[in-house]
Length: 124
Image (cartoon, rainbow, N blue to C red; front, side):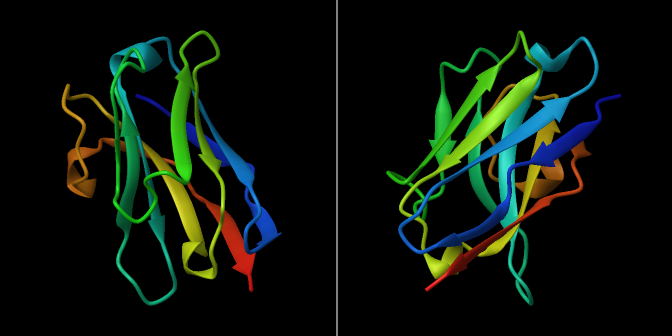
């Protein structure tokens, strides 16, 4: 069982930055692929980024590539999402998720555990 708690969301102007954190419980954090997804009002949840067990491989949605960076610190049981050059269309609730598989998936049902989400609002 893994429990995930996101933090770091907030209100920021377009062009600004935020750093989201996701703290995980449990001693097996390093055996999970970690991902970030987001869901805007009236829209389906969409993939943002994923990172492998060791952090050596990452995968991004085209919409955030070059602006967002996913990273992890297994010693701290935490995964991060650095959001730069934010746009109003990035406004959403951001969720972290843990996948017990080995591949970097952009498919939400592949993930076993989910956090409660943190709100990111980007004003124009």
